[in-house]
Image 1 (tube, each protein chain N blue to C red):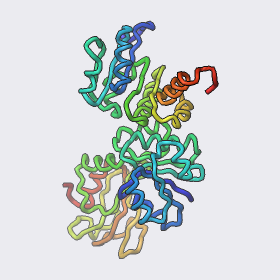
Image 2: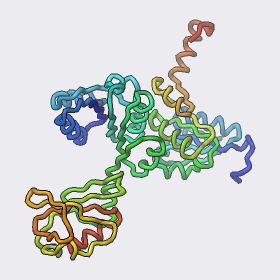
Image 3: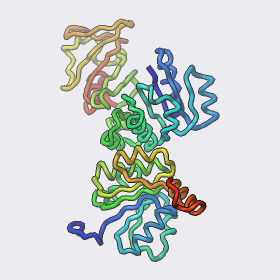
Image 4: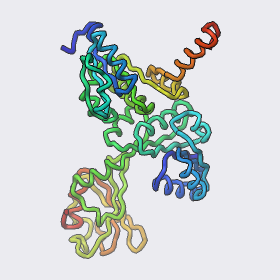
Length: 221
Length: 146
């Protein structure tokens, strides 16, 4: 699979690393010459120097033969234009745009970008709910944040230690989907007892995250 | 007041108060149109001069709230003239597709993007191409096809 990533920074670095290790063919577009040279030294990827919002640079990057274009620049209008040119001119099937202003999620979607990602939105929803992220080891939004999946490691002070799932009074709209015990995954049932150091993978709606955490951890902060 | 307007009191929003935006705003203001100019830099408004009778809004137009403050949803015409092509394109699309503004024009410096946005129904104006044609006409005359 051919993938084009536009932008720079850690996100591009780690995405490229992960895609290359999976055997995908990655092309990075960036408009800074020094940075491009650095990327070329670090990654087994094609690097194109130029402004990805112009059709001929996307063409040079092989957009016509790419299955996916991911726009991760810090400029929202640039990300929109990259995805639109990729879709309209090069008929790229999957496009992703990162937005910095969360209000652009809705706008970009109305303008036809298929996948819109907003880091600010995810982080701010956490802060709004006053959730401390200490005990959450992993969190991923599903379907643009309509559902949240979080991974929580159980420590000895949590009130749920020693209880079976049926004893825990979880609120509506949440489910403990999976447990990891000593690196082994368990699909829990009502009589499964929670032990210290278990990792719970919990699916819930975003607005009740804090309530769920309160039940599991016994406190909010 | 906004309803039942005739051709004369068209409401025009200009995004960007640079050389082009300010000049256009002055011309339209002189033609007695109601004009609002948005620019994120207050200093840009001095270009409008004393005879400008429209309104100015100091705000970053890529934030939707700024556009709503300028009542983009009530506009008859939106012209985007910031110095960033992609900002112009984004705002033009918001105006055309989301707020159904009847006439939307975007200024683009880079000619290669023009075709894409014409396809999306956004009228574009590319000074680079216009100047090139004009210069050619001055040099070799306008008889030859471009």
